[in-house]
Length: 178
Image (tube, rainbow, N blue to C red; front, side):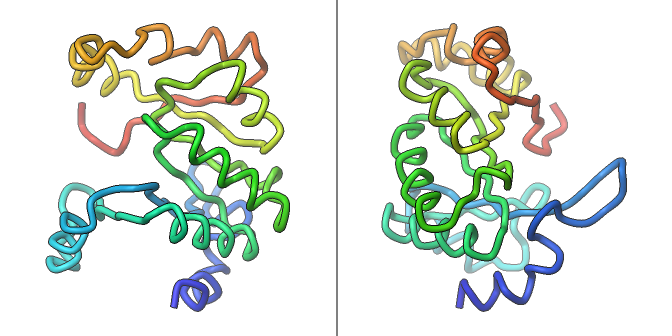
């Protein structure tokens, strides 16, 4: 079913997507991990997905790997949150890239906190990944919680490090009004 959907939607979500020079739409979001019970509850409310169309997903590593493989096969850009799972997600993306090169698709590593520069930055560069950070959420909404959890504040919004390491990055908003 997933591959059929990717083929059916491929003309709009593959490659650089569609739109104009101001705004383009493309790709898809895939969540690594998650709670299957929460995902089932959320799915039962379809098409009422909550704020701005968010739809909670829960994929185990094998499901996630297969969906990423299909996306790369059909030249579809993937965005995934890597908060707390950068190593796992990047390892899967490296496996996928061996079968279906995706280094020109600009896959997106969202919520890039807790990355290990020596381990993750070279992989991100090799895969052509774009890192996104969300200053409003990572500082305003969650900054104090991250500090209490012991997350290194220098790894929350490492923009200077990204520039110095030549890692492509962008700010993001998560589509929320704060």
